[in-house]
Image 1 (cartoon, helix red, strand yellow):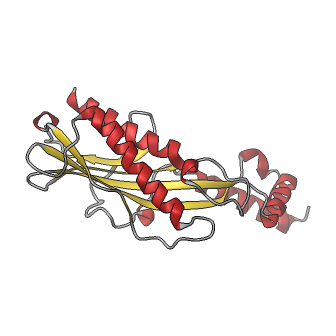
Image 2 (cartoon, helix red, strand yellow):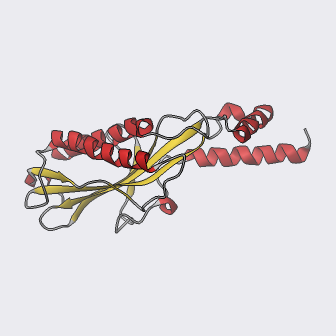
Image 3 (cartoon, one colour):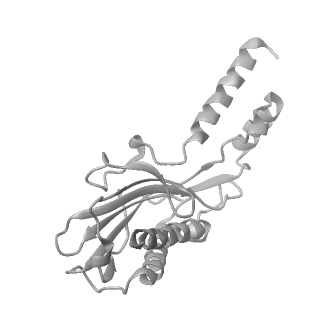
Length: 222
């Protein structure tokens, strides 16, 4: 292999490794849904996932008796595509609502709106994407790298499904922000670049987010 081609291959491999290293949202990926990102710190969710999170250090969760889950929104409003149609986007937010109410309802009784003693959960889906899967380490071997590139060009390489959320938790009476979280997840791989993404492809991700919110509340209660 010529030296130039070998160096180019190594550069591509290095970029791939850096790109795969971050499991949390980076500042340039923030959507603007939250009013203040400066307080966010890296943390582990109850399930062990890496997240960006902030909780008011003076928070007393015992004063809350109910929880109100606002309808989730897509922020910023995305443009549907053939790969990710409007029906998929709507189904994702609908399922997010169901999962949050199911899991947060285990923490506290659900309220019909904000008010005294109510925690308001304001969630948003801030990214929905499908992209060609990152190269696995064994594929950095030059010959395999070339084969992978050919597969990608032909549209037969698996596609990653990725989802990101930002959520803010608000005191239902004072409207003060008491906590916020930013995180992302990877769903089922799509078989090729013509495979239309469905909500089913990311339901496991959403279930994990909702469960972690419930478990986080239980930890704060202790």
